[in-house]
Image (cartoon, rainbow over all chains, first blue to last red; front, side, top):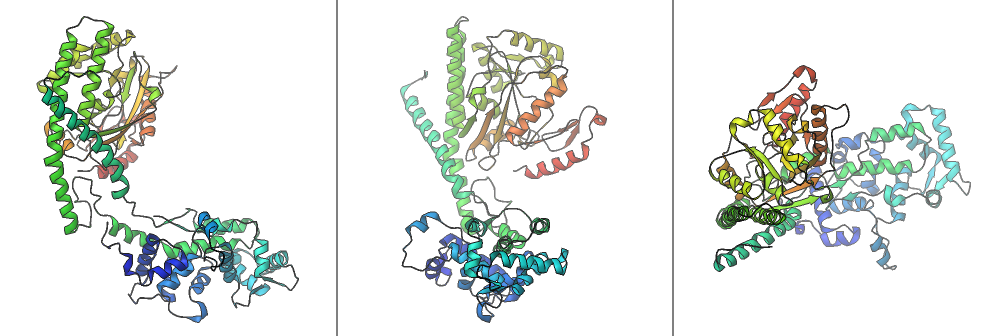
Length: 196
Length: 412
């Protein structure tokens, strides 16, 4: 019930989005409403500013980086499929779905690998496939920076890189990143369950 | 179950109506609940730890690579839903849930919904009401006839058995007449003979609801009219404790008679509503201590009505009995939960007031009701009534806040 008619047909390309992201029709509808609500001026797409106006995101230390992940390759407009594509990384992993998956098809966006890749990109600003010490320092400054001195930050950054780095090149590649987190329950930590 | 039927036609009619209402109500509640009752406020399931907690957690220990997960998740959660959305979506999605009697509290009303509401009114008044009235009539007449007949027998165990059968059958018919769906919890603690059963009071229907699951001895004033006929009929079949109006004022007499009743262990448990008046089922008022002075085992019972299907609260200043019954019979259903609780006895060094408060708290906790603190009473018409020694109670200002809340919850 409600003022909005529950027609998923209003979402453009809903079927292809559903196949790509794996969201249910009901979830897509809710996300579509949210997309429209965020788009205050009714442009039909989201800009950086629309996302920056979310207060809870503004106080998040990784807020800017998260917003950047929505605008890959320097684009300025975020349309609904792009919006949902990023959010689908956080879709909870469905055990059944995983078992029935056709191995020839590309991995679903919410697989463990893809979740890790998303997290990796939050660190790797220049997208060179490695987290250098410098990039690690920058993230640390964002997250812990206020209460810790510069030397302490540098030592934490050194320690973290050293712990994960296996081939000794002074940077953390994606594989090393995955390996250091292999015991962690990524599926649960990076999942947002959309209620029916 | 032995039924005494005047004639065959009535028998068929009775069975038909009974089946219709009996099957209709649980079906309605089972189907309606998930369909119409939508929780409109949250889109995502979130763990409620605020971000400050996560940040301060970082201070306490060394940074790890995995810390990014927490913040990214929080950030994405904020993108999907934040305080602002919740306000918008609640306002837009809260529309009439198709079950309450009126829809004036809801902001969204469309022509489509109004038509559905009108259909609902027609069904309730033209289909359900006549059925229910017929059943109620059958139930009450059977009850009076049955108890009169049973009353002719001499006192024996057969008489008790038959009176129990008559009571239970007719109460069940009457509950069907109101389309009541009752869930009993913890039936192993059902009040036993020789004890006192204590419950919170919301409406006259409470009596019906409790009696469908067991026989009790009632306590109360003798009324005139239809209630008087029923009371006199009840007393013929098994002993109840009815008082004349003048006798009610004499507390000692009341207590003496109750004690006599309890002393006979074979007698049915006495049913008492210590609040003394009907409360709107969101809170439990202070219990009057009289029933707790007698010294018998108290069996507490909590009754909680589900307000979405029908409002059972009797605001005695606003409605008289007949209009109240009409309202109840034209609602969709009366759905309630009854929790039986383990028996309590007065402990050493505890006086009646403390014991009463202890029982009151237990009932409030079980039923999910708020507790109105000592010294403050809540009149049925919403006004504040202060009782007893106010100086002993330091809760006066929170009580006012609770009352403001409960008056908001008081539905039409």
